[in-house]
Image 1 (cartoon, rainbow, N blue to C red):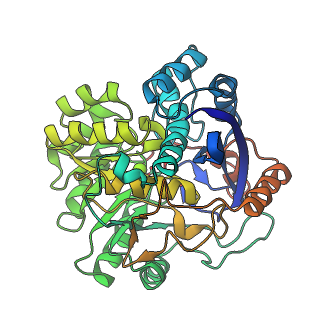
Image 2 (spheres, rainbow, N blue to C red):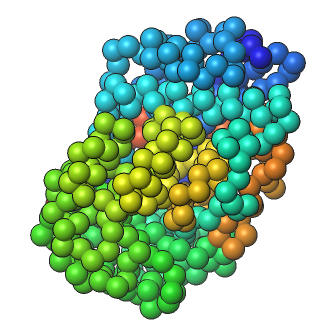
Length: 418
Ligand code: GKR
Ligand code: MG
């Protein structure tokens, strides 16, 4: 089935002022939506990053796609690699690890791979899970992803979550997420305050939600010594400790002392990192992410690799919309080794580009759609609205650092700062 046309639409959606080690989320998060239009009126959907540098790489591939067979994924891989032979993207916001030409190609390929799999599914009348080998589970579990946050944006815009800076407010936000989505696990984005304050936050959550798996992720904000100390303080409390310190070597030193497994989406971020990362025993859990690991099938290969080396598999997220969530659900369902509750930023957004109703959360899990392809329908009006947001907001890249300086004038991002 040939590709006739591909439409790339940058979009922006309202995002609350969520805090992390690099600063604070801007008023809008950027994404790209791709529609791969094929013969017989079939359209495949994909979603990924929306910053200008990424869009520039995607645009280099577009003219080459016309006439390509959506079932020829190795050919798609070659075509993307040829179009991007000499570019290395950097993620600018510094929160998903180092970039390389290999990672750039994997990221761009992934956007089109998902859209081609969606189109294949519509053509065959089968869900994407069936194209990935079949369902290992009927529903995919996610964790409540908590953030410290400011109460309002610089322009005064508020959101329904209010300010979250204390252990009490954290527990309150977790209660709301549990009530509304039924989550059973909790992840806290740390690296914002002194470790002692964040340890108090984790302890308050452990007390309020006994028996629920808990994680904290300071995105490498701590030194090796601090990480070892915090790991000891949270002994018996955490399911895993995510990226306490930067780099494979630092993580390996912490892992040697910590009682809980370490996890990462920052130091093992493409297939080239696996040998050094696993050899150093730096991690016990890897956070997959099809957006930068090279798509849904590469995520499954990654899973087999992790299983072979006794490393667990979880899933990373960035602010995203429904097409990405659908892809995350399909691949997680078809990947038996992905046994941890996945991350999602879903509760923090209030608008989307897909028709509502399919990706509902029940008991913290999303039922795997059984309809063809990704199982979702694009809402053309919503897409136009979110594109309008993109044009009006004027943002072209994610820059949590500069935006943070509106709140803290002398703010400097600093991993391993504590
Ligand atoms: O949304 O601020 C954020 C997160 O910090 C995100 O950018 C990270 O990539 O969630 C991610 C993580 O697990 O590191
Ligand atoms: Mg992380």
